[in-house]
Image 1 (tube, rainbow, N blue to C red):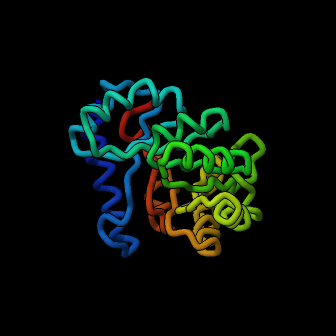
Image 2 (spheres, rainbow, N blue to C red):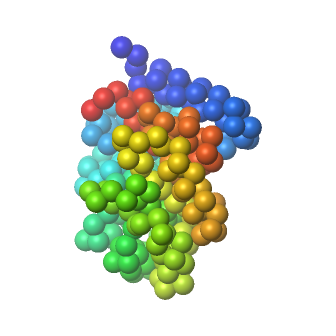
Length: 220
């Protein structure tokens, strides 16, 4: 079985190929290696191979492994890509460099309060539920542009991007196209979209970052 480091190189090569295919600048797309459920000893070789941007789903799990890794590797960037509960906003602001799952007023208010209190300014993305799935987090597409404006005007939050997770059983292309359209309307530059099964498609639709876990670390 290929090692995580070998898989990392293979994914990076596919990203470069997808960038070329879409006539995008080399390096236009950031790889977020999704390390949720994997231990620090599984992640360390991937860091040592040059990967610096990682995604985690849960604040508590990330707290257990990233402080020590950060002490060893100062230039890591950590993204929260899972749902954020308002009672975890304090810890999320302290630990993460990017929070991709802002999706309701209560979270916006808590993040604004904690960012002021801690003097930290993680980059923020709004998660959009492009498939309007009841079980999935994210703001409804029709409300997304107005919500970004409320985050900016009402809470002083500098929203930098949008994020989506398309329905597993649907063609992701229309969802990526919708997110790109909403980003233009909202005036945000960053698009976090595409996972292990569809990141090359996401790059064709304008993704600026892709979240890839199992294609690097293997199945959980």
